[in-house]
Image: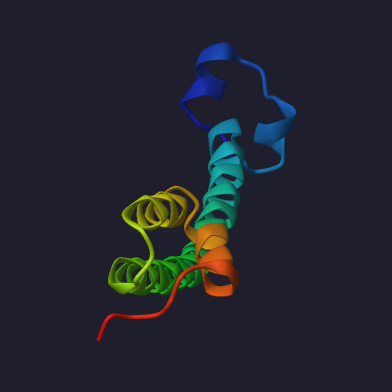
Length: 107
């Protein structure tokens, strides 16, 4: 249990008496920290996947809403207001457009 630092200083610390040096104890602490951190990153990555899926669904809905707004027979001013609402407020604008917006196409 004697390493180079003990021979130089002539005294033994409690950590060295237990068989682990200060460096090996801190390495063990950092190891458990990194294991915990990587597990948190893993969980965070999984939740990002679902958020990305929701984002893509909202984006697809917004594009669909904008196409329907532009094809409606509403005045150009109303079309512009609805497009701005959907672009600036993606989820809320989509919901408002679905219930309140113009949808009669020119087809």
